[in-house]
Length: 491
Image (cartoon, rainbow, N blue to C red; front, side):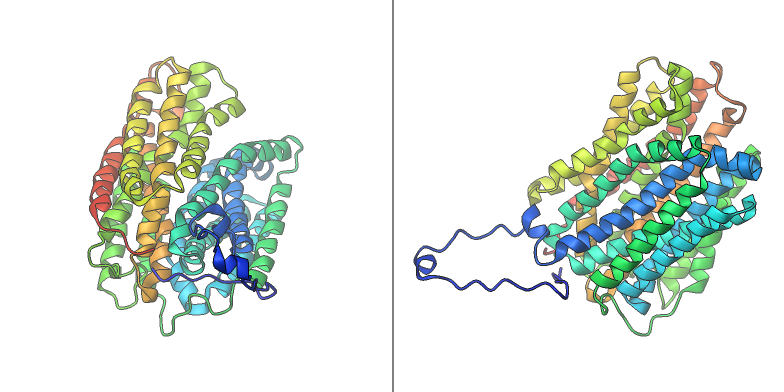
């Protein structure tokens, strides 16, 4: 992988003359893959910018889930509850898929500024919305901008950071999601209790504008530009229709309609992949530059493991409240153990050597499979500690492996496809999350989750909503085994 390090315009490179004593007794060579070197040569402010982008997306999505009851009351929009999430999710996946194309077309800096401005406008629409329709329009725009932000963060990592630093950079960004998981419910609860839910969106509109201004100062003008690319409109339309159907399946009232939407959405996604493969202008790269690298296995590992993990955050809080009498906040923080484990595992293994990186690529999905299986068996049980442990296994699996899978993916692309290849990481993960959430919703609704939880349907909901994760996790593990056997690209 070509290493690109960028220094801010006002940074002055250190020029230290070697003294005679130093020449006689030269210092020990400095480590070039540690935390100190990661933040050197002007990379610290760029990493801080990417952390801000992750925070805006993560915290906004988590806070919004907390204030939705207040929104529904104020805008008479309880019937549209699910669409606030599905609209955001559709925009997230479709825009995320086009993030690499956007960076190539107008440059990384302009693309990130456009994403920041789009997020600010979306938040403003939701903040001033007099009715639920305009509020939902703002959420869709926020989802599109969030997809761009996350996809472009991967592009920035690929273009502006040496390959040897990617595990630590990934670990740093992962930690933001852990912080947001804990801070999100608290911030949202404070605004909701004060009757000021609109203030949440004004808060994030301001942070999005800060992200835009910082991008203008910190990202070089010519990063990730490629001439002559055109928007693959047919692929995007098929993808939008497919993700829209899948996202809607999770909120459909009828089980038959939900199954039809989920199946049709999956077919449309496959059609989008076929159209992209046959087209000359592609959203996804044709293949990795390294012919020995199994790109399909990497995408499947991301897709399968992400799909396996969504049920815990969606259905865990409600089931914990019923089974153990927890408050909404208490149940939310039990579920947040997954995010804590993810962050802790990611930071603890970020400096692992190549031998352990290969092992962790497999151990991570194996832990996810164990966690998903444990939750399926335990969510209807009586041990809160066992459920928390299974959730921790789930989160730790992501932390152990995702940084190294991402390093392998980014390192496998040549210069021509690095922007699209790196941004596709977010798109593949988001698509897996959308499908996993929809199928978990279909399974939960088949167990009458819509009428509430009671002793008669507690176990069927657990086996349905959480059991659907097991085949996804198994597919992710098998793909990870194949990926770990491939030789890594040069860092």
